[in-house]
Length: 107
Image (tube, rainbow, N blue to C red; front, side):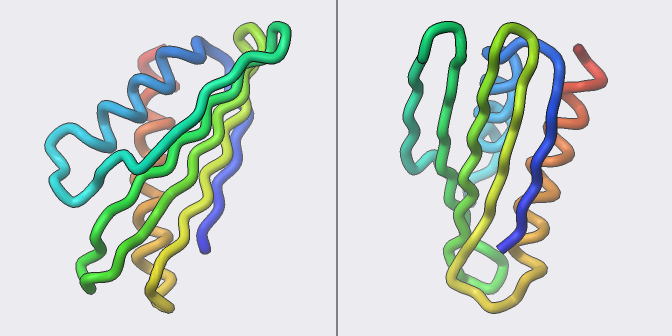
């Protein structure tokens, strides 16, 4: 399992849309598995699960939870999968980390 947590400032929808776009567009090995969105007062939460085939033929998953109140955001990414090789899980998490860092530069 690989884990990434980050506090951010910015637009909730913008980050969520960029994650969806960058993880899925042009990547035939990654697909959206399921998700959930909810609002509690002025706190928003989006949960997404993505899956991808690793180069070793194993299925990996990444659970992304984004919580936002105004421009304060908290992102948690946990990847897991059917392989004992930590590198594949870490690479999936690093890909998501790079998307988040790109989003920060653009916003």
